[in-house]
Image (tube, rainbow, N blue to C red; front, side):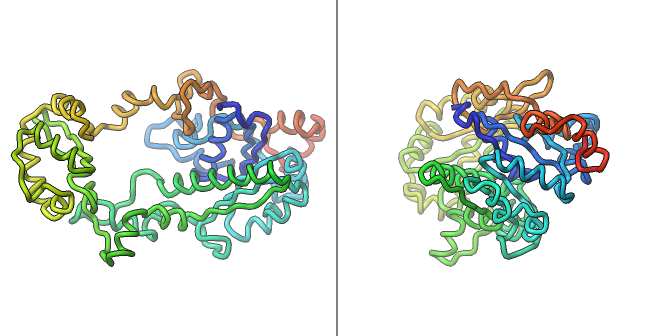
Amino acid sequence: MDSVFKGIRVLELASVLAGPSVGQFFAELGAEVIKVENPTTRGDVTRSWRIKGENGDDNSAYFTCINWGKKSIALDISKPEGLNILYSLIEKTDIIISSYKPGDDVKLGVDYESLKVHNSRIIYGRITGYGSGVDKVGYDAIIQAEAGFMMINGEPDSEPLKMPVALIDILTGHQLKEAILLSYIKMLQTGYGSKVEVSLIDAGIASLANQASNYLKVGVEPKKQGSAHPNIAPYGETYTTADNKRVMLAVGNNKQFKALCEVLNLPSNPQYSENSARVENRKSLNSLLTTEIGKYNAQELIDLLNIRKVPVGLVNEVSDAIGAYAKNIGLFRQGKLEGIRTYVEKGSKSSHILPPPKYGEHTTEILENTLGISADDIAEMAKKGVLDL
């Protein structure tokens, strides 16, 4: 499967996280993904998003997380010559990933209507903040606030909290990926391309899932309640073990709860016999479980519960999680540089794809090999600021 899109070319007219995550997905599946970067900003802004102490000479860790396997061309499409080069690439391209603010794409001549003139089979995947009719720029943190996520994230007495990853961007990328794949199937059937669009706010609202339906059906405003689940108990609660580690339970049915009680030597209690009763009596149940779980070492308890098929897990640091599970999902490796794959298939060879590109690293290669532009013409355009070599 890691070569299923071999021979497909993707142009990435997108930056930051949502759009580039879609580009990396196609790169991992064998597509040639060309990241078009703006010389006036020295490329994708995340190239400069470095944590404290990070080497400023390399691509930032943030940039590397979703830009493996791509080629970078530094092209100023605000200049006529640069736009014409882009149009020439469009003629040889299958999929576009765009994340321009509504209106900017039209001004630049890179909206779907402008591009399909050059290739009627093009699939144009567009990400906006609030939809095509709103020119407000979308930022993940703001969408988390506006979509209600911050008001349900955190402990009951805490301030509203943003999630520590740009989850709305990631969810939006997944939705766009699905839309592009459906459009690609349609194109194979009909021979015609199409435009698909996903907004950050729509992706956020759609992903509220049961929190939204709880409100729509019952009229109950979802509130912060830590990691506990509003519909199930004990599900999401964490407990400290005798060796001072944290474990989480995710008991989803009565059979699992009965097995949990048997492992902990807890007698049957009608207050907790059904899930609805456990939700109603969550506070007393948590107090009981806190006491009993605190008598066990973490691994001892996990082993006992695993035997009885009771969902339980250790609350890991990020480093522990990567150490334990990265081998299952796969890592990219190039020298000392490592990254986590976004597409996972057992036995996939995509761990050997190219490392995240340096800014403009493939400009000359793309112009010469893909478009047949001479070295002299490339040098002349570089002098004019159309290209950055």
